[in-house]
Length: 136
Ligand code: CMP
Image (cartoon, rainbow, N blue to C red; front, side, top):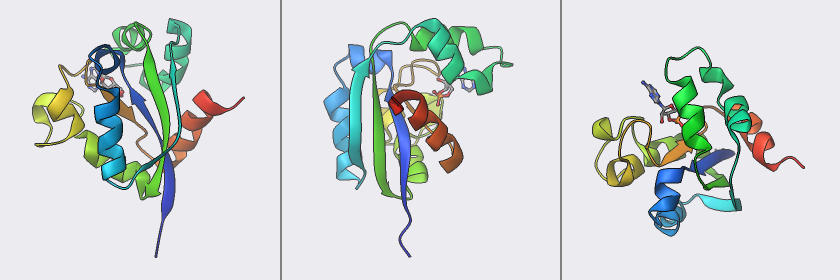
């Protein structure tokens, strides 16, 4: 049975800065994820802190929020069959050095912080994350 989901994808500052947006979007499109919405924005540190608040107890939280607010990002709604998991498979492991060949983080990630993309980790979080960026 088909299971069409939506998930949130972010192209992080390191990838936007290196002009990788079209390359990354093409990976989604080639893998049957359609891009329903896409916008290039810049968020401030308070907004980044709100977005990543599930990580607030982590030692890397402060740096993570500074980083996401350090430059333009591209936020997208991806849609397709099992989109949450499909996107996570295309991204690869959080740390680019552990990521499988041909995943976005293996191809383009620089470090665990500058890992080029973010993707929602569950359908529930996808709804929250999509609302965060796309609710008027
Ligand atoms: P992301 O999928 O955006 O979700 C949280 C981010 O925290 C993660 O990608 C990494 O870029 C970043 N991060 C930094 N240090 C760590 C760490 N030690 N473990 C997990 N994520 C980390």
